[in-house]
Image (cartoon, rainbow, N blue to C red; front, side, top):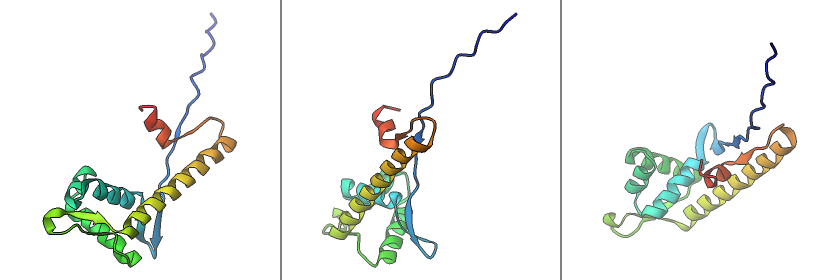
Length: 134
């Protein structure tokens, strides 16, 4: 008895995932998590609401923010009036967030392009996976 030939499975199309951050002397300076925290503060106008949106405690968000501000020697957020009015990004905070996200996208694009010449199967960027509804 002969067995039928194996049907080949569809070619995989894995997603490139990168974890990039900047550090100094082993201490976190800035990474995608910090950029996401700044983006959430910008969207919600509140550190508390930003922390909730990211699934972290207010204390953790505050600690990460203060650690990054200390490492950079820059203010990334400022009070938007009284305590009840929340926070807003400083000009430097917005620029740090935007530039890090642009750098990340450039590195990710480069990684995908490089993978196309090195790996035996096609890969895609994470954003492509999100757009495809996966």
